[in-house]
Image 1 (cartoon, rainbow over the protein chains, first blue to last red):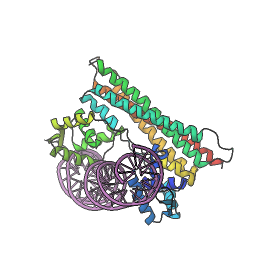
Image 2 (image 1 turned 30 degrees about the vertical axis):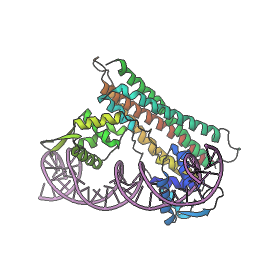
Image 3 (image 1 turned 120 degrees about the vertical axis):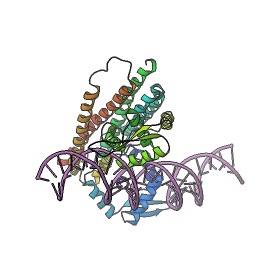
Image 4 (image 1 turned 90 degrees about the vertical axis):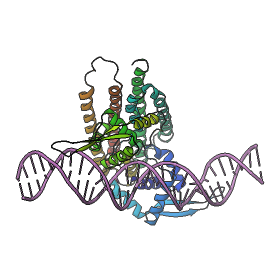
Length: 185
Length: 185
DNA sequence: TCTTGCTATGCAACGAGTTGCATAGCAAGA
DNA sequence: TCTTGCTATGCAACTCGTTGCATAGCAAGA
């Protein structure tokens, strides 16, 4: 149930509403976690009733009011507890890999355009991450003490970048493999 | 609902029982999909009642009897239909990345041993995959026509290998970053 | 005025995945 | 004989995640 913890971390980085969290999960947090607004609202409600977060009604002008959530003591404790527990290396689920092995029993060449679509999506994500890296981590911080929040955010972003690069290289490999069945066989 | 399709692909590669499928999902299929025996039995039962798979009771000696499943016509059709549908590039969920960003609000150095554990697990998986590659794809096939099943299985395995290598490199990067907070700050 | 679109929150139903437990055959060794 | 351990299948309950829908404020433009 790490969605709870992902939300807590995001709220520690910056308090915000459910709607704002949902948009963060589409952007910066999106390279290591995804969630819909439904999940987020449901979890926020539960964490509120458990005293993990505080709520504050924030009137806005030009747009509907919002509820701003911030992490309360028990929420911080729950996060800390979780941080000190070991977790299992997560299991992978790649639909595309199922398709690739399944293509052997259908038409391998028919999969080429699908793999190209995925390659394109990963290329776009990589460009998005690289733009974010240049924007947020392009110049060194003002020679102050080590900023853990900034450094660790950057480390996670580098993970997203490495993942996308790996995927693009692998999909090129797959395309080359599929290409051999187009003319041959 | 790609578990259905993952099972169909596995049964096309080789018919087998629910128990055997569960073990394949711990091994070769495990590098792109995971499933417990509960999920597998449930899906097999549904696919059987939908006519996607055929069942055959197989008496065994020295161990309990088993039900051997194989793909029937409608199952093959369902797989083919799915193969020709576009799917979305899957979303990622990395608990460890949540922990890394969360560590900024706790003790970054305390995360080092956890990251090392994960690095160890990925190193073991990589060794497992490389051993499988040497065993199953070490020597070229007997100069026959291109074997799509074999080539595509190998391409997917190369993806697993690339993933583990990327993870190990990234975890080293993370460890270096965390190390800077041990003495400093 | 009406529609479109973004912000903002939420319910209800369903489907997928996890966990704990139960049963049973058979082999091997203490 | 009793326990341990692997093969083999399955139920029930629960949690998590997805999808469709609903409501509402407000701005901008047709």
